[in-house]
Amino acid sequence: MSATRFEAPKPRDQVLDAEQVLSIRKIAHDLGEPRAALCYAIQFEGAIRQWDVRGQWLPLSDPRPSAIIYNGQKWIGPTWANVDANLILRWTPTKTEDTSGEQIVIDFRACPMIREELSRVPEQERKGPLVLNTKTGRPYSRAGFEKLWVRVRKAAGISSDIWNRDLRASGTTEARAAGAPLDDVKKLMGHTPRSETTGKVYDRAKLEAHRRIAAARKAIRPEN
Image 1 (tube, rainbow, N blue to C red):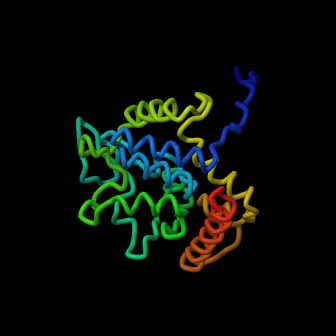
Image 2: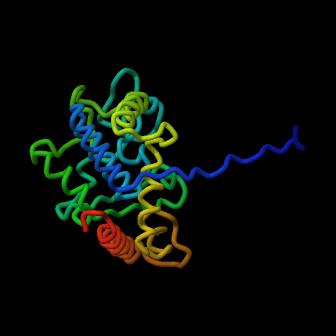
């Protein structure tokens, strides 16, 4: 077995464009799932992994603290407390939490889709999990979120080859098409910097990189 070699899976190249993201957000609202629409917007404009937006249900044995317990599991994920008064989200992705600890930093004000979704969330509801299933009052389960995605995708006429997690790659694809420098895209995606910098300085660099990317992406969308 030690000599056995398996062919690595090919990288996915499926992407959605801005018009398709507008469509799936509208359908999510039509289905009475407004926070799913918010999740799609953040995944796309923030280029963030699905589970780093909607969070995850984990075993109670997971060492991380959580105030949300249900059916023998605990929920871990971004909350409204991770969004400051200037509408800047700071979150440590699960993929880097135990390694580099690198954060993602997203200015929601620079993102037209996210701003539009936020305008629909009353101030009094901006507490607890960032993405909440408003029908159950709890964060989405993985299975429930994927089941909803299938309904949304079909209603939007989007191919079954497109997965929800492709929203992250779609965001970076739009960024590159808009001429965003690769270094800025790496900062947006939370990749570890090669140079030695202080956390404070690099945090600012990531924020400015996201703002440059957001402006470039907005400029190439059809409505412009």
